[in-house]
Amino acid sequence: MWQEKIETMPRVELEALQSERLKNQVKRMYERVELFRNRMDEIGLKPEDIKGIEDLHKLPFSYKQDLRDYYPYGLFAEPMENIKRVHASSGTTGKKIVVGYTENDITAWADCVARMMSAIGLDESDFVQVSYGYGLFTGGLGAHYGAERLGATVIPTSSGNTANQLQTMVDFGSTCLCCTPSYAMYLGEAAEEAGLTDKLKLKAGIFGAEPWSEDMRKEIEKKLHIKAYDIYGLSEIMGPGVSYECEYQAGMHVCEDMFIPEIIDPDTLEVLPAGAQGELVFTTITKEGFPLIRYRTRDICSLNYEKCKCGRTHVRMNKPQGRTDDMLIIRGVNVFPSQIEEVLLKVSGDITPNYQIIVDRVNNTDTFDINVEMSEELFSDDIKSIEKTEKLIRERLRDVLGISAGVHLVNPKSIARSEGKAKRVIDKRKV
Amino acid sequence: MKQLSVFVENKVGRLSAVLDVLKDNDVDISALSLADTSEYGILRLVVNKPDVALTALKESGVMVKCTQVIAAAMDDAPGGLAKLLSVLSEANVAIEYMYAFIGKEEGKAWTVLRVDDIEGATEVLKAHNVSLHDDYENYRK
Image (cartoon, rainbow over all chains, first blue to last red; front, side, top):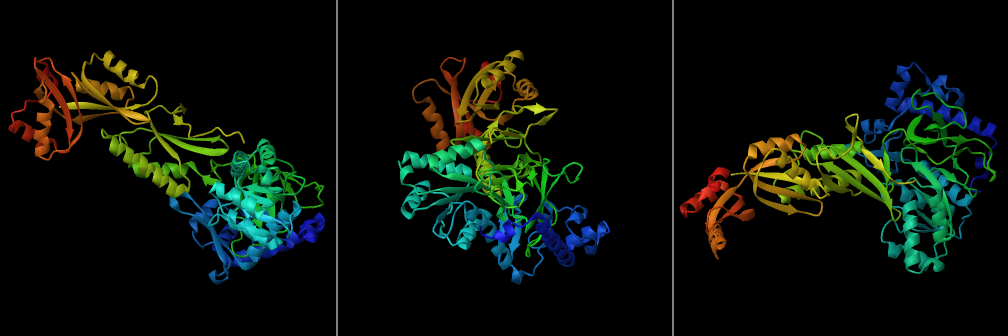
């Protein structure tokens, strides 16, 4: 075990540690983060009112919108000279959300990932191929630093170029693969086709950043002859490693010494009892650079506090079962219909044309198509100018979303409406 | 002359739905062309009652626009179209698209032209004594 004492800490002790850390974090943030202080003041709550985790529910929530409103550095709790790295993800109108890490944060994050790698049986003798994208996205560097911290040999291939990925895997003797589950499926198939499956030395895969099913897990395990493990995370809280599966693949252990999870009813905002399904909320109690109190993830899941067979006491969350907002995860990228709406509005002029997003999974890769109803603003007698409009929509979407979508112009009123409103999203993926 | 340009998605029945609207409104088509791409086409129509057709199509939810085009007469004989086009190219008029049909008048055929400069083209053609028709009724005679 990577940090046995912490990972197997009896719950009473763990909760005492959480309480202590929570108190400090609240006090620190009250002094340093204006938005948090204002929200506390609004409800007349003082840092000293928080005596432990039993008072957590009194604290105000925080939201993704906060990150946009205080873009880029307005919510950081450390001066920029202590911020050693930033990560970001795309947001509406091209405005990204930005998160920052101190040196301690980067180490803590690496520990989260190292805990997982150790839990699934990896050590210094392993070769970890990181095929997540490197960059502002947390996937690549998150897995990279975790594997490095564990002492394994990191093979930082980043994403793309499948033939090269496979060759690297064979030549360098990769024993663990980190990427999105759909890409793992794709690699598995490509390996079969190239007749390379038997030459692979892979034993484990760490897959996350997009929803996947148990069926898909079995499929990947069969194709690549590995055990496939789920990892969960979000850049607002840390990145991949906020929670992870151990060798028993029975729910994802939340690194509870760093993140306190709660499940709330998204409508009443009440905290739900252990085991109930609801919206997952996180409080970061050790984060220095960019801490968040009661951050609403919008992911729907439940928590299991039973002790795991692996000996870890940290609570396990199940795979998110959906979202409380309309966010889609397509090829590992977060997409909001509102982003698409804004692009269409800008291209079209004054009125947003009716549109429908169609997501499917074909050959294990997400397909992403947008049907746009032809409108006065978009129509022209000239095919060249319609094609130019289509191209403009495609390019703007790629700029804003970071992934490309197929754009199809369809007849006016051909998108089905219910109660006058068009159904915006058709997600045909069975995950 | 007025031409109707109609957006038609490449799906079974889309074109026929447009034609049904014209039929129901007693609109007679004298010429048409269909420009197509892999996903949609633009149906261009010259009809006897463009204003009636425009309103009826709009009301039925079809995306349609009225476009100004030139209808020019030519001899229905070898070289007829070539002659017409050489007049335009000499005057440096660019043609966006065109289509032709045979009229009722013996020995005459018609070309529907969409050009970058309608006024310029009209002038040039008139100067070369090409008969042009402003509306449907004229060339029906």
